[in-house]
Image (cartoon, rainbow, N blue to C red; front, side, top):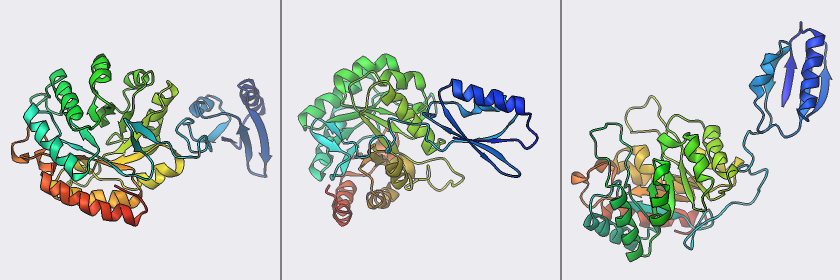
Length: 337
């Protein structure tokens, strides 16, 4: 990091700053000009709170030139991380599609949808058993019974299952019934929960918060990996902007940005980004072209009657058409579907 000193700084205070930095184990290199005094601080500053240096009156500004995340950083691990989910590799040459209903409504409902998405080429079954809803009066999910339904139907069609975890007290249930634990946008910075996930030997699908920066998202992944769990899959699901036409604004630029600074796989959730079923295919194809490692898509055979998010759910025939077009785009970018 670089520390710039105020022009009228008291030298005694500067000396105190330098002594403090050296006590912390940093090497300090000076650079002087006619109108400036700058110190380069060398060492492992990733976990250091640079704001603490502003306690010294002589400090004008502090600039970090090392990212605050280490384990997710491509500088630490250059090769791409590939997450193995029951033999399905996420992060390699194959684009993995996860599909299913927003909410588990019944065994029959999930069975119909799982069969359809499996036949179209989806590899992982998605579904919500515990539903975080903005309104307390909206459908909250089937809970444990929903997890059991997902587990049973996943076994029936030989599909691993991904579902959203909201409460650390439910972790034992998810370890028993679910193959990939999803952390939704609202819990991206639930640090107590992230620490618990770091203790698990289970893949984690970490969604970006709708008002969070890429760095904050990666820092949340760092929490999980710092605890010992390196099976993290990042998921972009759109961010909140001033544009009201879509539910969220899909930030496709996160794919090349994250792949530049991190080795973790990145997938896209076009359903939550768009909020409208007729935009899902276009966003999916664009995501694959941008280099995404996978997609997570909501599908419902009767979206008009869906308990939640019917407006953004594809009918099976629309999903099948999407998969056919996605195969062509994947081939164009030297990947398979």
